[in-house]
Image 1 (cartoon, rainbow, N blue to C red):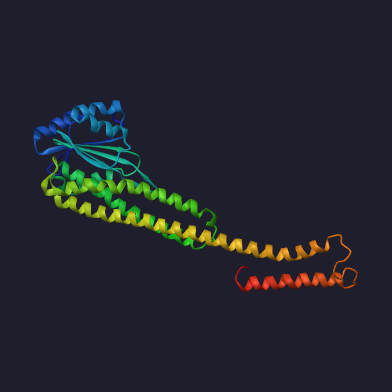
Image 2: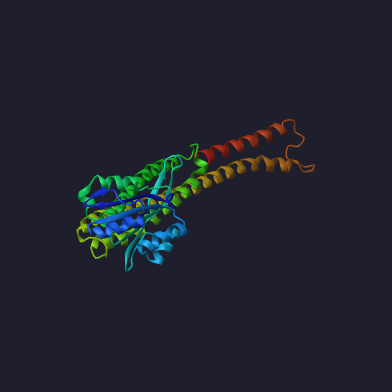
Length: 330
Protein backbone atom coordinates (compact mmCIF):
# COMPACT_ATOMS: atom_id res chain seq x y z
CA UNK A 1 0.00 0.00 0.00
CA UNK A 2 2.87 2.35 0.78
CA UNK A 3 4.06 2.08 -2.85
CA UNK A 4 1.08 4.04 -4.18
CA UNK A 5 1.08 6.69 -1.43
CA UNK A 6 3.33 9.45 -2.72
CA UNK A 7 2.95 11.67 0.35
CA UNK A 8 0.78 11.94 3.43
CA UNK A 9 0.87 14.85 5.86
CA UNK A 10 -1.17 16.84 8.35
CA UNK A 11 -1.34 20.63 8.01
CA UNK A 12 -2.30 22.93 10.87
CA UNK A 13 -2.37 26.72 10.64
CA UNK A 14 -0.59 26.58 7.28
CA UNK A 15 2.28 24.45 8.58
CA UNK A 16 3.16 20.83 8.01
CA UNK A 17 3.33 18.90 11.27
CA UNK A 18 4.48 15.45 12.21
CA UNK A 19 1.64 12.99 12.50
CA UNK A 20 0.95 9.27 12.76
CA UNK A 21 2.42 7.10 10.01
CA UNK A 22 -0.94 5.42 9.40
CA UNK A 23 -3.28 7.68 7.42
CA UNK A 24 -6.31 6.45 9.38
CA UNK A 25 -4.78 7.69 12.62
CA UNK A 26 -3.61 10.87 10.90
CA UNK A 27 -7.16 11.59 9.70
CA UNK A 28 -8.53 11.08 13.21
CA UNK A 29 -5.93 13.48 14.61
CA UNK A 30 -6.74 16.12 11.98
CA UNK A 31 -10.46 15.88 12.70
CA UNK A 32 -9.95 15.91 16.44
CA UNK A 33 -7.90 19.10 16.38
CA UNK A 34 -10.58 20.89 14.36
CA UNK A 35 -8.19 23.34 12.68
CA UNK A 36 -6.10 20.88 10.64
CA UNK A 37 -6.50 18.70 7.57
CA UNK A 38 -4.84 15.67 6.05
CA UNK A 39 -3.53 15.62 2.48
CA UNK A 40 -2.79 12.19 1.05
CA UNK A 41 -1.51 11.76 -2.49
CA UNK A 42 -1.74 8.50 -4.44
CA UNK A 43 -0.37 7.46 -7.82
CA UNK A 44 -2.32 4.96 -9.93
CA UNK A 45 -3.78 2.84 -7.10
CA UNK A 46 -5.46 -0.44 -7.88
CA UNK A 47 -9.03 -1.14 -6.78
CA UNK A 48 -7.84 -3.23 -3.86
CA UNK A 49 -5.32 -0.60 -2.78
CA UNK A 50 -7.91 2.18 -2.97
CA UNK A 51 -10.64 0.29 -1.10
CA UNK A 52 -9.18 1.03 2.33
CA UNK A 53 -8.74 4.72 1.48
CA UNK A 54 -12.28 5.11 0.15
CA UNK A 55 -13.76 3.38 3.21
CA UNK A 56 -11.73 5.44 5.66
CA UNK A 57 -12.53 8.77 4.04
CA UNK A 58 -16.13 7.90 3.16
CA UNK A 59 -15.76 8.55 -0.56
CA UNK A 60 -18.77 8.06 -2.79
CA UNK A 61 -18.69 4.78 -4.80
CA UNK A 62 -19.36 6.56 -8.11
CA UNK A 63 -16.48 8.96 -7.54
CA UNK A 64 -14.24 6.07 -6.52
CA UNK A 65 -15.16 4.24 -9.72
CA UNK A 66 -14.24 7.31 -11.80
CA UNK A 67 -10.97 7.73 -9.92
CA UNK A 68 -9.95 4.14 -10.59
CA UNK A 69 -11.02 3.88 -14.22
CA UNK A 70 -9.51 7.21 -15.26
CA UNK A 71 -10.21 8.36 -18.85
CA UNK A 72 -12.64 10.93 -17.48
CA UNK A 73 -13.55 14.36 -18.76
CA UNK A 74 -12.71 17.30 -16.49
CA UNK A 75 -15.68 17.77 -14.18
CA UNK A 76 -16.87 18.77 -10.73
CA UNK A 77 -19.33 16.66 -8.74
CA UNK A 78 -20.75 17.30 -5.27
CA UNK A 79 -21.63 14.39 -2.99
CA UNK A 80 -22.97 14.36 0.56
CA UNK A 81 -19.59 13.89 2.23
CA UNK A 82 -17.11 15.13 -0.35
CA UNK A 83 -16.37 17.19 -3.42
CA UNK A 84 -14.90 15.41 -6.47
CA UNK A 85 -12.94 17.26 -9.15
CA UNK A 86 -11.30 15.79 -12.26
CA UNK A 87 -8.48 17.65 -14.02
CA UNK A 88 -6.48 16.66 -17.09
CA UNK A 89 -2.91 17.99 -16.90
CA UNK A 90 -1.08 18.03 -20.24
CA UNK A 91 2.59 17.34 -20.91
CA UNK A 92 4.57 18.52 -23.93
CA UNK A 93 7.36 16.30 -25.26
CA UNK A 94 9.85 18.56 -27.12
CA UNK A 95 11.72 15.56 -28.51
CA UNK A 96 8.75 14.28 -30.52
CA UNK A 97 6.66 17.50 -30.50
CA UNK A 98 3.71 15.68 -28.98
CA UNK A 99 1.13 16.42 -26.29
CA UNK A 100 0.15 13.83 -23.73
CA UNK A 101 -2.58 14.11 -21.12
CA UNK A 102 -2.70 12.57 -17.66
CA UNK A 103 -5.54 12.60 -15.16
CA UNK A 104 -5.76 14.07 -11.70
CA UNK A 105 -8.64 13.45 -9.31
CA UNK A 106 -9.13 15.54 -6.18
CA UNK A 107 -11.42 14.59 -3.29
CA UNK A 108 -12.18 17.26 -0.68
CA UNK A 109 -14.15 16.59 2.47
CA UNK A 110 -14.22 17.06 6.20
CA UNK A 111 -10.58 17.82 7.12
CA UNK A 112 -9.03 15.91 4.23
CA UNK A 113 -7.78 16.10 0.66
CA UNK A 114 -7.15 12.95 -1.38
CA UNK A 115 -5.42 13.31 -4.73
CA UNK A 116 -5.22 10.43 -7.22
CA UNK A 117 -2.87 10.84 -10.18
CA UNK A 118 -2.79 8.76 -13.36
CA UNK A 119 0.10 9.08 -15.80
CA UNK A 120 3.61 10.40 -15.35
CA UNK A 121 2.79 14.03 -16.10
CA UNK A 122 2.12 16.84 -13.64
CA UNK A 123 3.50 15.44 -10.37
CA UNK A 124 2.11 17.23 -7.33
CA UNK A 125 5.37 17.41 -5.36
CA UNK A 126 6.08 20.90 -6.74
CA UNK A 127 2.56 22.07 -5.85
CA UNK A 128 2.92 20.72 -2.33
CA UNK A 129 6.31 22.46 -1.87
CA UNK A 130 4.87 25.70 -3.18
CA UNK A 131 1.96 25.57 -0.74
CA UNK A 132 4.20 24.66 2.17
CA UNK A 133 6.23 27.80 1.42
CA UNK A 134 3.05 29.93 1.53
CA UNK A 135 1.44 29.25 4.94
CA UNK A 136 -0.98 32.17 4.52
CA UNK A 137 -2.51 30.35 1.57
CA UNK A 138 -2.24 26.87 3.05
CA UNK A 139 -4.07 27.88 6.24
CA UNK A 140 -7.25 28.23 4.16
CA UNK A 141 -7.53 24.45 4.43
CA UNK A 142 -8.39 21.90 1.72
CA UNK A 143 -9.66 24.70 -0.52
CA UNK A 144 -6.10 26.00 -0.86
CA UNK A 145 -4.95 22.61 -2.16
CA UNK A 146 -7.67 22.50 -4.81
CA UNK A 147 -6.82 26.07 -5.85
CA UNK A 148 -3.06 25.39 -6.05
CA UNK A 149 -3.55 22.24 -8.11
CA UNK A 150 -5.99 23.93 -10.50
CA UNK A 151 -3.71 26.94 -10.85
CA UNK A 152 -0.67 24.78 -11.64
CA UNK A 153 -2.55 22.68 -14.20
CA UNK A 154 -4.07 25.69 -16.00
CA UNK A 155 -0.82 27.69 -16.01
CA UNK A 156 0.89 24.73 -17.65
CA UNK A 157 -1.81 24.77 -20.33
CA UNK A 158 -0.58 28.23 -21.34
CA UNK A 159 3.04 27.03 -21.46
CA UNK A 160 2.12 24.06 -23.65
CA UNK A 161 0.05 26.29 -25.94
CA UNK A 162 3.11 28.53 -26.42
CA UNK A 163 5.23 25.51 -27.39
CA UNK A 164 2.58 24.35 -29.87
CA UNK A 165 2.45 27.84 -31.36
CA UNK A 166 6.16 27.60 -32.17
CA UNK A 167 5.67 24.19 -33.77
CA UNK A 168 2.73 25.53 -35.75
CA UNK A 169 4.83 28.38 -37.16
CA UNK A 170 7.45 25.87 -38.31
CA UNK A 171 4.75 23.72 -39.91
CA UNK A 172 3.29 26.76 -41.64
CA UNK A 173 6.72 27.62 -43.09
CA UNK A 174 7.04 24.06 -44.45
CA UNK A 175 3.64 24.26 -46.12
CA UNK A 176 4.66 27.33 -48.08
CA UNK A 177 8.03 25.79 -49.00
CA UNK A 178 6.83 22.78 -50.97
CA UNK A 179 10.33 21.94 -52.18
CA UNK A 180 11.69 21.49 -48.65
CA UNK A 181 12.89 18.14 -47.25
CA UNK A 182 9.58 17.54 -45.41
CA UNK A 183 7.32 18.46 -48.33
CA UNK A 184 6.15 14.88 -48.91
CA UNK A 185 5.11 14.48 -45.25
CA UNK A 186 3.32 17.80 -44.88
CA UNK A 187 -0.22 16.40 -44.93
CA UNK A 188 0.73 13.70 -42.41
CA UNK A 189 2.32 16.30 -40.12
CA UNK A 190 -0.75 18.53 -40.29
CA UNK A 191 -3.01 15.61 -39.39
CA UNK A 192 -0.76 14.53 -36.52
CA UNK A 193 -0.62 18.10 -35.23
CA UNK A 194 -4.39 18.35 -35.38
CA UNK A 195 -4.63 15.21 -33.26
CA UNK A 196 -2.37 16.83 -30.66
CA UNK A 197 -4.56 19.94 -30.56
CA UNK A 198 -7.67 17.76 -30.23
CA UNK A 199 -6.10 16.02 -27.23
CA UNK A 200 -5.35 19.44 -25.78
CA UNK A 201 -8.92 20.64 -26.29
CA UNK A 202 -10.26 17.61 -24.44
CA UNK A 203 -8.36 18.86 -21.41
CA UNK A 204 -9.19 22.57 -21.57
CA UNK A 205 -12.73 22.99 -22.89
CA UNK A 206 -14.65 20.75 -20.42
CA UNK A 207 -12.83 22.39 -17.50
CA UNK A 208 -14.50 25.75 -18.15
CA UNK A 209 -17.78 24.85 -16.44
CA UNK A 210 -16.18 23.49 -13.21
CA UNK A 211 -13.89 26.54 -12.89
CA UNK A 212 -16.83 28.88 -13.44
CA UNK A 213 -18.78 27.07 -10.76
CA UNK A 214 -15.87 27.19 -8.30
CA UNK A 215 -15.41 30.91 -8.91
CA UNK A 216 -19.08 31.51 -8.11
CA UNK A 217 -18.46 30.62 -4.46
CA UNK A 218 -21.52 28.37 -4.09
CA UNK A 219 -19.78 25.00 -3.90
CA UNK A 220 -19.80 22.89 -0.71
CA UNK A 221 -16.44 22.22 0.97
CA UNK A 222 -14.97 25.28 -0.80
CA UNK A 223 -14.26 28.42 1.21
CA UNK A 224 -16.05 31.61 0.16
CA UNK A 225 -12.77 33.50 0.53
CA UNK A 226 -11.32 31.44 -2.33
CA UNK A 227 -13.72 32.87 -4.89
CA UNK A 228 -11.30 35.53 -6.25
CA UNK A 229 -8.53 32.93 -6.58
CA UNK A 230 -10.67 30.55 -8.60
CA UNK A 231 -11.85 33.48 -10.70
CA UNK A 232 -8.20 34.14 -11.55
CA UNK A 233 -7.74 30.48 -12.52
CA UNK A 234 -10.88 30.71 -14.65
CA UNK A 235 -9.47 33.76 -16.45
CA UNK A 236 -6.24 31.91 -17.20
CA UNK A 237 -8.23 28.93 -18.42
CA UNK A 238 -10.19 31.18 -20.78
CA UNK A 239 -6.91 32.45 -22.19
CA UNK A 240 -5.59 28.91 -22.66
CA UNK A 241 -8.84 27.78 -24.29
CA UNK A 242 -8.73 30.70 -26.72
CA UNK A 243 -5.14 29.81 -27.61
CA UNK A 244 -6.10 26.20 -28.28
CA UNK A 245 -9.06 27.23 -30.42
CA UNK A 246 -6.80 29.63 -32.30
CA UNK A 247 -4.34 26.81 -32.98
CA UNK A 248 -7.17 24.64 -34.27
CA UNK A 249 -8.43 27.36 -36.62
CA UNK A 250 -4.93 28.05 -37.95
CA UNK A 251 -4.40 24.35 -38.55
CA UNK A 252 -7.62 24.19 -40.57
CA UNK A 253 -6.46 27.20 -42.62
CA UNK A 254 -3.03 25.64 -43.16
CA UNK A 255 -4.62 22.37 -44.26
CA UNK A 256 -6.86 24.26 -46.72
CA UNK A 257 -3.85 26.15 -48.06
CA UNK A 258 -1.90 22.91 -48.46
CA UNK A 259 -4.77 21.25 -50.33
CA UNK A 260 -5.11 24.31 -52.57
CA UNK A 261 -1.38 24.17 -53.29
CA UNK A 262 -1.65 20.51 -54.16
CA UNK A 263 -4.50 21.27 -56.55
CA UNK A 264 -2.56 24.06 -58.25
CA UNK A 265 0.52 21.85 -58.49
CA UNK A 266 -1.52 19.05 -60.04
CA UNK A 267 -2.99 21.49 -62.57
CA UNK A 268 0.52 22.66 -63.46
CA UNK A 269 1.64 19.08 -63.91
CA UNK A 270 -1.37 18.33 -66.11
CA UNK A 271 -0.62 21.37 -68.30
CA UNK A 272 3.00 20.27 -68.71
CA UNK A 273 1.95 16.74 -69.59
CA UNK A 274 -0.60 18.05 -72.10
CA UNK A 275 1.96 20.39 -73.68
CA UNK A 276 4.56 17.65 -74.13
CA UNK A 277 1.88 15.29 -75.44
CA UNK A 278 0.81 17.91 -78.01
CA UNK A 279 4.42 18.40 -79.15
CA UNK A 280 4.88 14.66 -79.47
CA UNK A 281 1.61 14.27 -81.39
CA UNK A 282 2.71 16.40 -84.39
CA UNK A 283 5.75 14.33 -85.48
CA UNK A 284 3.87 11.16 -84.57
CA UNK A 285 1.03 12.10 -86.89
CA UNK A 286 3.31 13.03 -89.80
CA UNK A 287 5.45 9.93 -89.33
CA UNK A 288 2.30 7.85 -89.17
CA UNK A 289 1.04 9.23 -92.47
CA UNK A 290 4.35 8.59 -94.23
CA UNK A 291 4.45 5.13 -92.73
CA UNK A 292 1.45 4.07 -94.80
CA UNK A 293 2.11 1.87 -97.87
CA UNK A 294 0.79 4.15 -100.60
CA UNK A 295 2.51 4.95 -103.88
CA UNK A 296 1.26 8.48 -104.30
CA UNK A 297 2.65 10.24 -101.21
CA UNK A 298 3.80 13.92 -101.34
CA UNK A 299 7.49 14.18 -102.27
CA UNK A 300 7.91 10.45 -101.78
CA UNK A 301 10.47 10.02 -104.58
CA UNK A 302 12.19 13.41 -104.17
CA UNK A 303 15.76 13.33 -102.86
CA UNK A 304 15.14 16.11 -100.33
CA UNK A 305 11.72 14.84 -99.29
CA UNK A 306 12.88 13.15 -96.09
CA UNK A 307 14.89 16.19 -94.83
CA UNK A 308 11.98 18.49 -95.69
CA UNK A 309 9.46 16.42 -93.73
CA UNK A 310 11.85 16.05 -90.77
CA UNK A 311 12.54 19.78 -90.78
CA UNK A 312 8.83 20.58 -90.96
CA UNK A 313 8.21 18.37 -87.92
CA UNK A 314 11.03 20.10 -86.01
CA UNK A 315 9.68 23.56 -86.92
CA UNK A 316 6.16 22.55 -85.83
CA UNK A 317 7.44 21.18 -82.52
CA UNK A 318 9.56 24.29 -81.84
CA UNK A 319 6.57 26.49 -82.63
CA UNK A 320 4.40 24.61 -80.15
CA UNK A 321 7.19 24.74 -77.57
CA UNK A 322 7.48 28.54 -77.85
CA UNK A 323 3.69 28.89 -77.69
CA UNK A 324 3.38 26.77 -74.52
CA UNK A 325 6.40 28.45 -72.96
CA UNK A 326 4.92 31.91 -73.54
CA UNK A 327 1.64 30.86 -71.95
CA UNK A 328 3.37 29.40 -68.88
CA UNK A 329 2.56 25.78 -69.56
CA UNK A 330 6.21 24.81 -69.59
